[in-house]
Length: 264
Image (cartoon, rainbow, N blue to C red; front, top):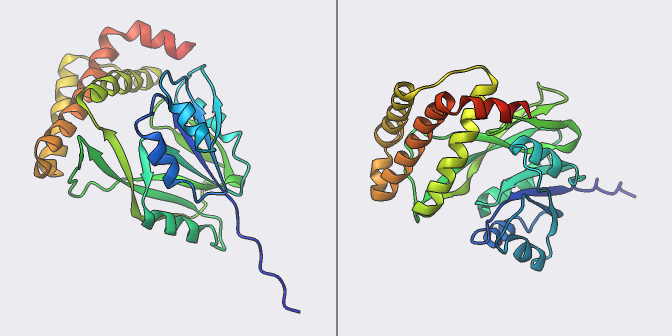
């Protein structure tokens, strides 16, 4: 009698949420192929948790916000499957990426897989010439230790030399749907970025902020050609440039507050 085939490795998709009622259904529907989907909510005041629960998703809550890495580590404690894929609530797994993820689970060698982002802002995909940036999202659970970093966190692995590969199908990122939402994220990401730099002893100021913001705008709008996306492309580049400016302005004028928050 032939040996029975080895069971397929299991997959958990973990999702962090905060006031994502507009996006959470589409996000979770795209993740429904996983063996288990777990949501960790950071204190939503809208219907995010209720929508997720009605969809049959396992939902937990953690109100003690200490940064993205800490929150992702808390989410990780609920992920017991062979592989874990981290998905944000404003992201959607495309059909092509879904097929690639399912194929990756059967790889003979444990591998960390990265994904490309396809930005969708103000209702339109943003043209981003030479702008592909891959992010590690799929991990063998056995090699993933924890995450570090207040914002743009990174994973620490048992084996830093583990093979890495990149999925070719994109992960859709609905980063900025409205001006109101962009203004909210402007404050959040500017201050998180300033806190991260303050913890490393870096300094800022208005002139440094202007230089950083202008360089970022030229990079995105001109060299990466977001101008081809019309008004949405301009707003996308402009808001990210503003984040760069206020990050360095806060690093100078809010330094004491930032230092105290890091020490806590």
